Amino acid sequence: MEGTKPVNKKLAAALSGGAVLVLALSGCGGDDNEKLNSWAKQVCDAVQPQAKKIAAANAAIQKETSDNSTPEEVQKTDSQAFGDMSAAYKAIGDAVRKAGAPDVENGEKKQKDAVKELDGISSSYASLQKQVDALNTKDQAKFADGLKNIAAELDKLSKSGNDALKTLEEGDVGQAMQKQASCQAAAGSSPATGS
Image (cartoon, rainbow, N blue to C red; front, top):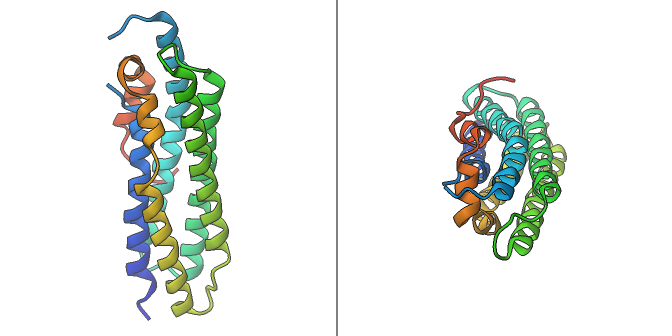
């Protein structure tokens, strides 16, 4: 049966939407506010390795879709990728939490909203990992159906959510982040091939 391959391609397409979120966080648009620059540097330095992790997870899923992979291989790769993404978004949330509120109007609310959003995305990927782990790889049709449901959730996840992050990065925060070398590197990094 050919059921798994087209579905996993959908999964990869939906996933690439999620990577945009991190690049939004890391590639923002100059104020000379020392406190804000320090905040931006702390966040950007923490985001860069996580952005690479997310790009590598994306690349792994996309690679698995281009090969003639067995359901077991697809399951293993997807599970690992979702786990990595969950951990990466959690780490980004922790970094924003640890950095404290940026020195801008409503900074505290913007920071709290962004952390809540990042933690929510992390939980969503953890949930997808559990779902992919539970798929029946012995029955190709059931496996393909299960992947279809996961792809649909992933699609929703990639379209939802980064409003609080966008709000956090508006104005002076975005300008301060854009000045950071680590944010520029994260935004410019192409998806890694292999680890």
